[in-house]
Length: 548
Image 1 (spheres, one colour):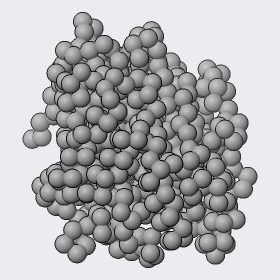
Image 2 (cartoon, one colour):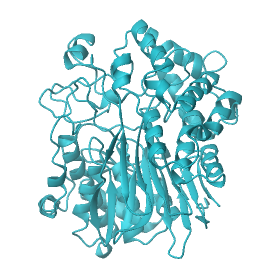
Image 3 (tube, helix red, strand yellow):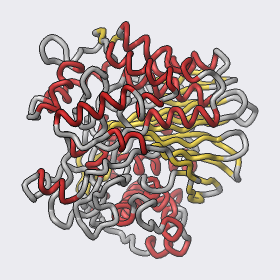
Image 4 (cartoon, helix red, strand yellow):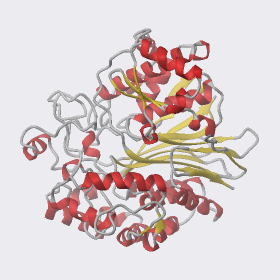
């Protein structure tokens, strides 16, 4: 039998993420006198090296910080290049766009999609600026001190962990199908022995990334946007057909935002506002807050969770876009009256909403806490595995493919346009009760993320599970239409098997999926009533929760 992980109890501080070396980097910073933000940043920076398929220096980040008194939100997502227009995309793709890939951001009325790989999928990376901005407001240790472990692993190498090796192998096969000069450097940097992925336990080095990280550390990220890195990046784009320019990089800035919330059975669940999809989780929880899940049979409870999630996605895909460019009715979507109207649409049978075909994403999530009570929920991503597969020569990192999240429908609020942030899948979460912090949580994985948030919160609040047990709990994943994937563990007993049979009788098209990555990777840290923390880490991934 498989034994579940045990929760980690720590009196002073804790870090949880999907790769152990990165978690250890964060803990080392805590033990050196850093605070939770320092620890989160050291973890995030290390993750770009030790889990490169899921995030990279050329990705984006979002974060929620509890400073001991209140919550702060940082939107560290980048904008599209000034030359990235709908006409430019259509001209480059023969007027038809790309074949739909699962990347979404609203209905594709033309039946075409944004390209998922290559330069047309690239937006300005926001992670380096996000690291700087979080540190400028909250950091305690010198910024450069937070890069020590990441630079060491890049320079001297590290043994690749098993799940990272498996996803890396899949990425190599995908890369082999790509044609274009912009993809050549990826093979040099991210393959070994003439074109294969590093194996589990095999030492892998990325000295070019070490050099890039040193420049970012020494300059407070300025080198990335206006210095030597920016010059090299823009030059590579100009030589290989990219639209990203030095002016695009120089204009980038993060945005401090107020988190948004939904009340759920005496608790408050917090997400960041659009352009992220956190509103989908809040919409679903608002619907579920009006029904008594505890009184339902297992199949009815799952049915309501799935249907509420579908409704949340339908609205997110219709309305979420860059709030600096269009009006997103976030407040209106989260009113009790709107939740009641949406709740009335749930029947005893599976419904068929109309969002775009969802995608699995490449993302890392982490959380960190410290002895002062500061807590951080941070998520960082290059979107689909290894992002765009564009690696600027000599810099050792890949660029994200977040522009794949735009729509090509000219009537959609998320239509591609210059200098615009796309629909974003990555969402950090935070839980409070009566205004007091419970703690940070998150579940990575593209379209799975809001679904994972709903399931972890329900397991925590409705079932009373601790963070590790809530993460261990079998998950479901709504794919599209009436298609739902479930983990084999959900059918481990007769009650679960009966629930699945009854879901099928309600019209849900259930598929048992053995691949754990389909169900996302999560982390959570809850504050203990008498001080200290209890932390959990995703059993489906390589990572861990550690504390002191």
